[in-house]
Image 1 (cartoon, rainbow, N blue to C red):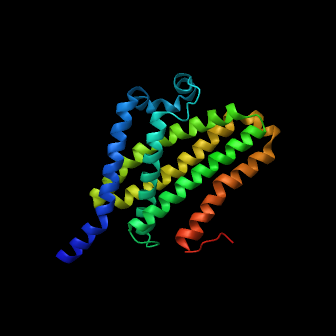
Image 2: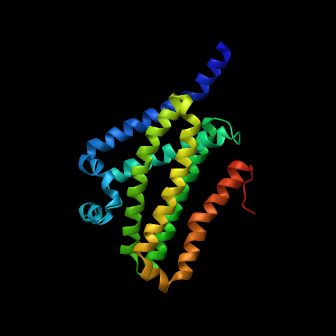
Image 3: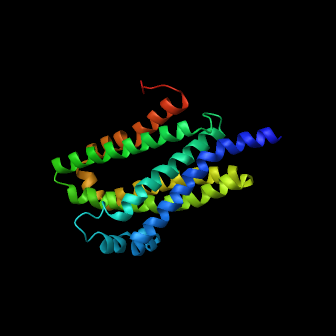
Length: 224
């Protein structure tokens, strides 16, 4: 019994350090941008939120979003490791945390680069930054909710299973709601360029899921 407890404690040690680092970064983000941090819950009132925090020349690249980029990647990586390990698809190992962290960071970097190129080509940079600001703000809020829930799931094992299922459902709901909101706000533009919108959905929403399934679940390195 003692040996099993020691193994469990050793396995969870890296999660403790990751969550501690995330909490420290969260506190730091509140210190450097207290007003915007406190207004995260207003992201659903997007027009008001956009009017307040998008007045700068680069609303996407501000101090709060830089901090939350690291918070989001770390929190989502821990969540994916715990979720997949719960279904015995991978082990609860820091190796998979770093794999997910690298994949998510590379994915968002490449995605932004491609979006920026397409927006520049079609003279839609203002539209890109508006939608990007909305996506980032909503994911920042969800990252805080996910962090609290992860702490409960990790340190109170009795709640692990219901929280994992609930968080998975909420994440899917957030993705659907986010995509629906973007479609609704840009419905007139999508009607004119629906083919590009279909390519966008396939390239940025479906292919990453295929990569996750093939690489992390089936253990393959290609999607073919």
